[in-house]
Length: 80
Image (cartoon, rainbow, N blue to C red; front, side, top):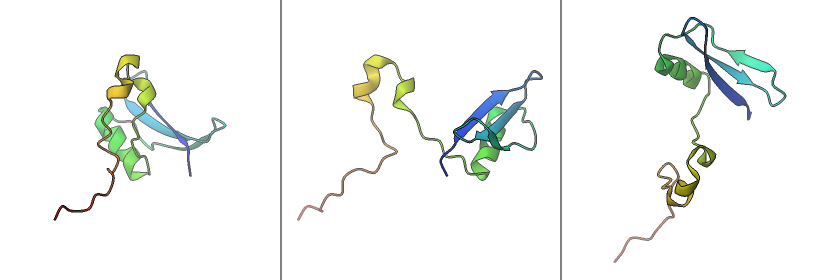
């Protein structure tokens, strides 16, 4: 199921996450708050979050220079 993941810091400087439906309603959220972002992220990953970088967050001049090492390259035949 495609959804939107929201990570945010609370007023007491603790990290939480929410999984939202496309209409903005909360489908699931973290059961606790985390002192460190990494702990929050790890918990979200356990619940199905997968990081997919977005090209739209990069400065405009670097879009054509992006190396997408997370995507598999083309299959090549071994040289003989």
